[in-house]
Amino acid sequence: MDVLLVGSGGREHALAWKLRQSSKLGTLYIAPGNAGTASCGINVPIGQSDIAGLVRFAKDKGVGLVVVGPEEPLAMGIVDACEQAGIRAFGPTSGAAQLEADKAFAKQLMRSTAVPTAEARIFERFADAKAYIASRDEPVVVKTAGLAQGKGVFVCDDPADAILAAEKIMVQKVFGSAGQKIVVEEKLLGEEASILAFVDGKTIYVMESSQDHKALCDGDTGPNTGGMGAYSPAPVVTEAVMDRIVKEILVPVVDAMNRNGTPYKGVLYAGLMITPAGPRVLEFNVRFGDPETQAILPRLRSDLLEVLLAVCEGTLDQVHLEWDNRPAVCVVMASAGYPGPYQKGKVIEGLEQASAVEDVVVFHAGTTLADGKVVTNGGRVLGITGTGADISSARQRAYEAVSMIHFEGAYHRRDIACKALKP
Ligand code: AMP
Ligand code: GLY
Image 1 (cartoon, rainbow, N blue to C red):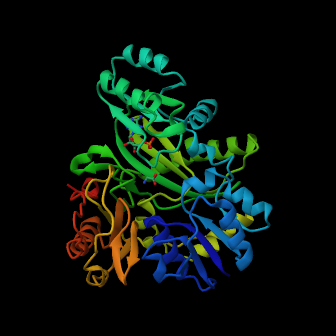
Image 2: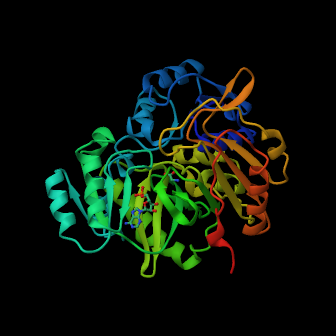
């Protein structure tokens, strides 16, 4: 079966790498892809938001499946457009993608179904938000309601900072129309975890747990990014915690989406805070996580293409997945300046040497080919995943490979997965 994969990040390289291992896969097209996906299939120069162009390409090539990596095309309705054109597509419809694309919608849905989450208020006017924040003594979190590439959330210990964040989003409009509404919520304390599940409308299959590192700097300090590293599994998600996540969060949300007339199909990603009182939802994403996918998929032994097809066909209840028990750790290498402005076009060296380290996979994110060389082309440039007998050896492998890779201004966190190390 020929497949079109949409996107160009580290997540898409991981998906392409895993799909390539399927005996069912024919030609894999990646639109637009990166220098890494080019080694798994054929990169096609169509942007991820060119929905009409992507559907036309899929139709012309007669692909059997379109797999959508990022949230933007999902929110824009790529799955609806594929379905209308008679093409099978993996991911939620634009209606169901509102779970991620509108944090106010997600909050209301959680409230109406008693899904545990932070207490929150939604604002459409800056003056109202300002008055509310000024009346609070506790730290608050200010969130852009629309899509902001993981950069629209501000955790503020001081009300003055929270008001500045609201002003940035609503008055200066730094995230454009995504900031027409904001969510202001209580700051939760605990450890974070990401739970990704395949959902076919009725059956929920939960993948192995993981933990992202959203902050730019060591010790979870500095501004939020798309994610600077991840590991899987996350020890904080014990069996008892996982039971609660399924019963209190995933099942009620999937049921509510059915009742709303927007059945959920694809990957449902719950970003959670595991608090002393139990798991609380920070956010939903409607797709594979990035960089969580780079830590989860190397642990999947089964055929990914078969699972994606089962989700599309509504036969997930017949699927059983095999996982590698060994943990995996992914360290992101980023361009100097990210998540702010950064330069592109820096030559990357040492990729082959790093890939040769035992149990290491080098996933490309913001890379491209120029004059036969791999050069930087984005904020997050590479995700280096190591697998090992325990978290410590997986970390060691990942960091050994990282040390072999060089480009001007390369930056990475040094404490990825430290939280999971046994004391
Ligand atoms: P989100 O995109 O909503 O997951 O937020 C991005 C990051 O901000 C999360 O991964 C957390 O690190 C942090 N965050 C979001 N909401 C809260 C909250 N209510 N309490 C504490 N931290 C939060
Ligand atoms: N790692 C966070 C995300 O994929 O949104």
